[in-house]
Image (cartoon, rainbow, N blue to C red):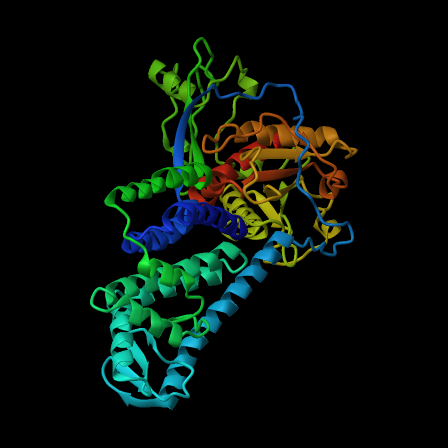
Length: 555
């Protein structure tokens, strides 16, 4: 992410610099040039940060699973570790490159700070006289005839006329706070150290400072004597954060010193900034499409609830869900309620047998007809050294998996369903050690999808259920997965894949009990991450999964 951002900044900087070099750099409007160079630099860093949201409303006819078990044609599935259980370390070279880049930037920034401290120490060593704003140093000092923050450093051995010109020139740098520009551009050069344009930009800012000081100084001084003094005191470019009175090369300064001021009409050239900013915004402002799903009720559809309910449902207040707390009619459901339910979950011609039941599972159904206890084994995918993927904000999939598994167990406990977790902490467990015993009723492995590359389009950001056709007991796994998937279809927060997926994963292939993998959204999607990061939504999903498990045990 950071490398892409810096690349966008670099391209913006190149466009702004090209316009300055070919159109504005030779003009004598030095104050406007300073404004362009400073604001242009800040705009280049700002544009790639901006995000424009584009809202698009989509009409969705909520699909419903039919009674036939079908599979998705999408073959992208969760990647697993090797069967031996040792971690496969996949180096992300983009991340390594980003860390290396940031490290170099930090070193350069540290060097800049050390330079400032060094200049202060050197000035103390060679100081002869120091007042509030002027420091006179000996001729041996390498730091002289310059301004440093709010101090003017002058060679004490020069003539009084030369001293006066230097002080006048450097006072312009101090009064116009040129040090601010230098600090900003030096910080930018530390960040964009790999981009050669930033060093050209820094040189133009230095030149602009000298043009401004020369222009103000020569208003009351003879240009010939001033130019002679510049040539006499010329020295190589100095440190990063000082303005030197005369530094090589002097060609541009002498040229600008004698150039005739440009006419006011030439100021129209600065309008070039408008198309430049527009182009950079169109090219590099982030565009985020927000899809608003509008669920539309289909006419002539049969409500999935029975028209007459002869039984009463008793729900414990402690464990009741919002849906359970509503009274269940013992007569025909009102047309108003049919309209509301139809707008959320339209269904086509479902029989009573297919109707999902939101009941709190009580102790009398804790055993199958054989008397075997219901045991659901829940696996939080990955763990320990195997962190799997991460979201853009750095949240590891392994942590999200464990959180979801723990919440699923909490909700199952409320229903008196026994749940065994394969891991209850951040621990690396080999795949074969996660496989449940034959005494378990069913097995769920919880994961979260992700895209392999940053900024890659997320193909599907919702919930998925995966089974393996290579399992000898695939029919039972299909029934289990189908019931869970049918139950999950009632969740409106995220899209749910309307068919099972087939994947050759070890936990699914070799499980002795009906086994499924549930992908709880895609952590590369901000929308998906926000939905299942909300505990309320996650608990609703977990209860729907448990509804599917309960329906499976009754089938």
